[in-house]
Length: 140
Image 1 (tube, one colour):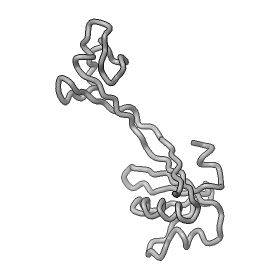
Image 2 (cartoon, helix red, strand yellow):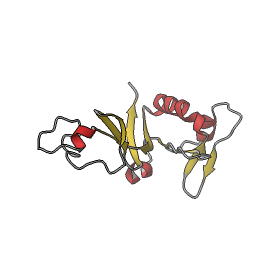
Image 3 (cartoon, helix red, strand yellow):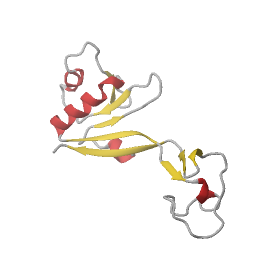
């Protein structure tokens, strides 16, 4: 993540999801970046000089990504991510070694510690810890 955020060739957007949090954007330097980001809107993007990034309203996310792909052909998106695990009570309460569950035996016979949401006898799910994920989009 640090490499992606620190490089200066491909635009990067950090999508934050907390209440009141803004998008953070890093762009290759061009003198007209402020006008390009604003794109005729009434609101002006904020330049955070000490940290060298722009802050934009969350509602600009899709437009920013589309326009960055047109202008730069690539854009990195860093965003919150939580992995979803899927298993079943039958697997968690199993006695033998045979497992046919999508967890591939990771939860076989370990029981339910209360972290699983049981949808039915054959389907339980839980979400992992919140992490950041990074993906590179490339224009076709």
